[in-house]
Image (cartoon, rainbow, N blue to C red; front, top):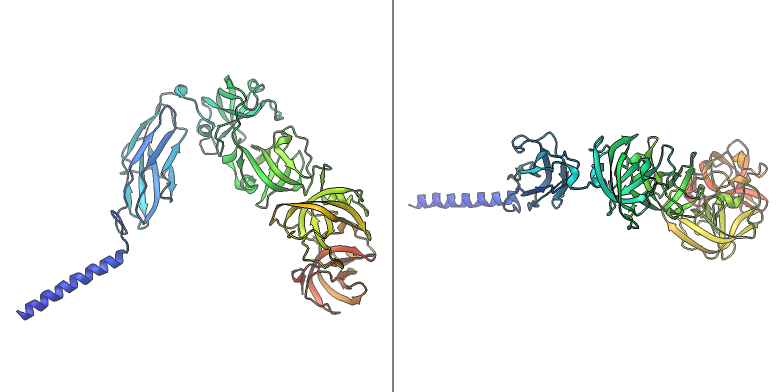
Length: 539
């Protein structure tokens, strides 16, 4: 009996330990599904109403090991047994449980099902829903969002449709060589909510018109348009326009392929004009990457490199295989500069001559801070800073001098107001009255690659005054010169260097310097390179 009792006791212990190990291996296995189990299936609902868009929604998966949803559509039933090759929607967000399937065929029948997957790669299927699309679009009007179809080419190409929306660009606002164009937008705004209208019949449409318009959808050189207009009904006038969609310049650049913003009213803020190109185009960068502006609209702004675009609004357009933002009028552009406007660039203040044409005048100048007040030591209680046009180049720098520059940092996009002065023949904005920092963290213009011979006083390199320059592979040839000056030579001729910057390097004759960067300064009848800190001097 004792032997039998020991066997039973051992078996009970074995079962208990095994159960504990199973519990540990499962962790916090949730109910009703967990690792090693199929996930909880969703319950699907799908309706179309009177449009050719299906609105699908499903219950959220409660499982801790949820991985993704896959929504499938088919023209035949039995999706779970024979799924299509790819889903129409995939999401790894457990709470992302809705989708609008647009651009479907009129009078067609579709089937939908949701597959839920967990981290163990197990799956479960929802119920299958059958949806019948209305016989035609006559029972309801399409939106721009539906016409765009959330893809590069509209699902309605070559079809005649009825569309409703608000006119965001009137028929006489853009110069278009082929004829009148207007732009329609959905009231809520946002991605995929714009559509170009092209036909002589839309020439009298005005911003704010609420319309119903019939025509044929076409793709013209990559731009979705409603053409061959057969009817236009102005339901009302003076409607509120869709809100502009705030974007970064990189989001609407050619490299980003911003198809979702095609024909949509968008806006950028605090961009810098980095390049002025031909045919009315110019590049703007808000420190995220350049985008292209164009001049189809009726505005008077004339861009200059270094201008700040405080706000730039317009329609995203596609032509000549490039994306570009098209402002409509002067109200769409709030800028500094303007090619001789009320706010100037460093290039304009320098005037491409030794003495600024604005000497003695109070001006506002915009640019990027290239040296902040901590970089250079002044002999008085005032401090120095340096400003540059974003595109760099000759005549693109300007010195600031005053006792109210604290807070400026390299990379700040600023507008500074003060009096232009020629101090010992160096152009500067003296004792600024005010400055405004529009944005921070911008890339500095690249230093100009020069030779020491090009920067010697005898050459008189006036055009590089207050511009950051760089020379390579130079040797220290003199030290202890008057006014805190020493000399370097890369073999092309000797130029001077200064000690106003906050660097620890002590020059010695014969030293080799592989890279030497600094602001080209003029004082005591000499040009000299003034490094800011140790990063500007590489031995």
